[in-house]
Amino acid sequence: MGKKSTKISNNKVFITGGGGFIGSHLCERLLVNNNKVVIYDSGHRNAIIHTGLLKHPDLKFVKGDVLDFDKVRSSMRGCNLVIHCAAIAGINTVIKKPIMTMKINLFGTYNVIEAAISNKVEKFIGFSTSEVYGPYIYKGSEDDLTTQGEVGKTRWTYAVSKLAAEHLVHCYKDEYGIDI
Image 1 (cartoon, helix red, strand yellow):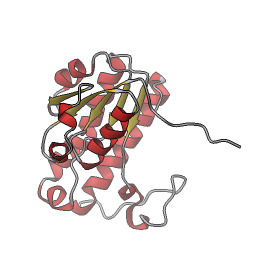
Image 2 (cartoon, helix red, strand yellow):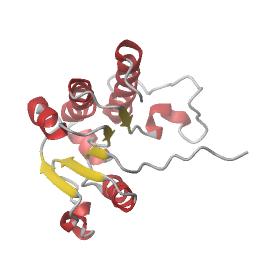
Image 3 (cartoon, rainbow, N blue to C red):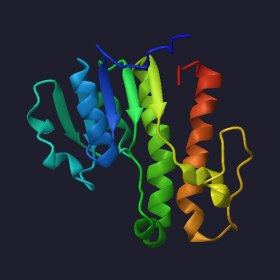
Image 4 (cartoon, rainbow, N blue to C red):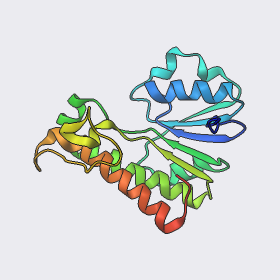
């Protein structure tokens, strides 16, 4: 039996965190597949500078923070697909800035999906992490129960924020019917 194609083409795609390592590689693939891409990124992880993508005629770069709802919403206008990659990552940042980690990863997701609903976006793809499986990271599957470390241990801030964001996105699917 043939596998259903998952190729994304002929869309106007809004990517948060598109300037980071994963986001910039994803942008590269999307542009090859005849998409127009809007990158919304804070510029903290600047991997995109080394790619030459910023000169591509079908790419628009918007420097912004996912905590700025109005800017997210206005920058997303006209897009039919959202790919949400923006997150605070890196264990050093998580340990030093646990509150900012929670805000960006959870409230940022809230802002991006609210903007998607407001803009009547057709599909929302949210990136998560294997960290949501806690100490069973290498043996976990999506059907397993999640287990996190001890409450109050900063080490788990990233995982908890991403897991909460996953639950939030699924709530939007259930309540608003957005395709995820």
